[in-house]
Image (cartoon, rainbow, N blue to C red):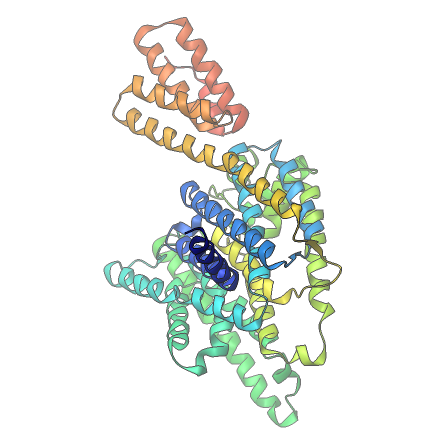
Length: 509
């Protein structure tokens, strides 16, 4: 009997050794699918699901590489580690500690996904399989967008991705990859049609400009080799492109006036980011805390915003010079790393050209719109970067030894630090529901449980203060008023919301 079980275990182990890399690739594609249909994984519960799933995939990778005696490659490890450290340092003085902590975890697990793809899909065919499998999500997303257009005639079409800007930004990651393989027919062509539908329904003229710049790189060789006889055609198509951009711009302005969209806020948001940087030059206002800090740095008549609509300015205002310096160093190392294998052969490589054109397009788009501010698009950016980073002998590696066991232990020990805040958030939501029903006693119990689980939960402290404020209105007890003030000050300590400050200045009557 024992020999039978031994043979079964041996065969299962052999199957695991052959298929664990494929299971990780499929798992990463599953994360993208889930994120698309869960508000870009920007909600805390959805992000925690992705965190947990990526942690599971890390355990599978460590187990598989340990069994097959393969080392784990960690290119860019030092600059990535320093960038994450700078983000953590900036979070300690954040205007919104919870948002900063959440964004730190999002960046951490985005890089985890990057390293998982690097170590599980090392061959071009494996990378191609991952991107093809992931691109299939565009088909149901496009069908949903068409359904929303039929049911609702307003210009805002977002599918499941919060708004049309995030929808368009996600679609940009697939244009060149699917364009390269659209001629092969089959489902890949259907996916390319789906991405075109999404971009058209997204109605973003910044997408058109970003794509135009990306196409200039993609067809760089064609443009360079255009001889004198073709110059007139080149000028004609250039003028046609400019006219198309002008038409799109005019169309967007007409929509602004028709639906009264704000079309002059971006400068105000950028100036507010500059004011944040001037007043907090070293560590900024905290990663992800721009929206909370914005009322204190409001410029002109611009509307409130959670984001700067410029990724670099957002990073500078939220993490200061420290975060920006480490991030720019990471970007410089990546640029140099890509240049290392820029040979004539690679120059004509369609795969390399596709992914670099995609990165250029997405970077241009992120300078004028929100894009990488959401978990899904951070993941996609690093996944697109992964095929351009080839393993090098100088890279940091984890050899198949006790260090792998230590890595597994570290990932497991990290779980409570992101899952406990999610549990606390469920208590907070429970408290808000009780508060809406005017069940103040139950609401107080729920808010207390939330603060016991997460001592830095500013919104829960504010909810707790509201229950004591209501108690003071009913009883006039000085103890309730003191508790109201103490809880609200604790809320302001962790989340410097202008609303909390206004409440402190106007005690309950």
